[in-house]
Length: 161
Image (cartoon, rainbow, N blue to C red):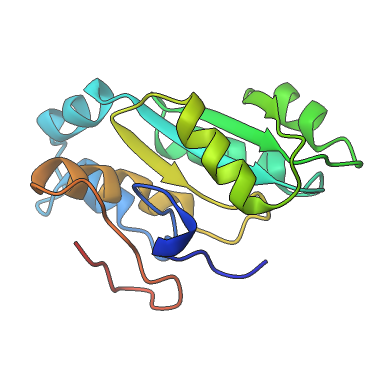
């Protein structure tokens, strides 16, 4: 799959690399920062996963995002897969919906029409992106006045707001 960009939809793009989630949860001094964790937990976070024949990796994606953001709801939009992607995603704990119109653009439009959340994270079902960066992105979204954060997918430490 190719890397998604701002023109492909989404309010928060999960193109994460690295492991800043532990720093976010524990703070710079290494001690817990409950107000950060509570602030993230209070948000309605939707992880949106458009999929086409991703049966080999979708369960891993779901597990990693649920571990990184325990309060999130993972939605898998199965775009006419023939390999059991939807069943595997459902068994892994995702809310699964099927989109019959072919193509990622149709799936993206359907996801944002269907799902109401405070924060949207769009990721691919092929386990391309590091879910451990998701808490950092949610925290950054909460701090800024804008509600769109795009992450350069090929640079490990770059984050734009």
